[in-house]
Length: 178
Image (cartoon, rainbow, N blue to C red; front, side, top):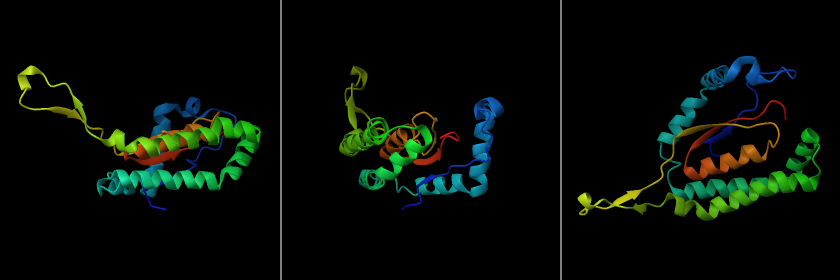
């Protein structure tokens, strides 16, 4: 329910007979997404939210991952029905190839986000022996996730969980074909 993670499903493409990337090209697609986001003020909202520092605390990231995990569990039946309607997958196949894998990924990210966010010592050259070296992962900021049609739930939600765990804000462009 935070304003940080927002998904938009329609960018004005309604032609079912041709692939969007072939029709306008990848750069054209990115221009459409950017112009849509600009019209809605989405880029600025995401940028402001990220720059507020709200996504940096690891506890906040884990809370968001837990919310997502509980939401998927709550609506798992509806998700499986939508996958069956769109792609013709049975409930077992939908769980094994879509929702189950996403839940496992979320569980993994919830358990490991703290260790990913920690500083990790690295080798310090002899010339800098007085100091010490480390590397620390930091979020990119705002991330665009474009999902394909073949595994729509899995290939949308898995990058979302990874981006949330990393502390990024997200804009999602789901496939127009599923």
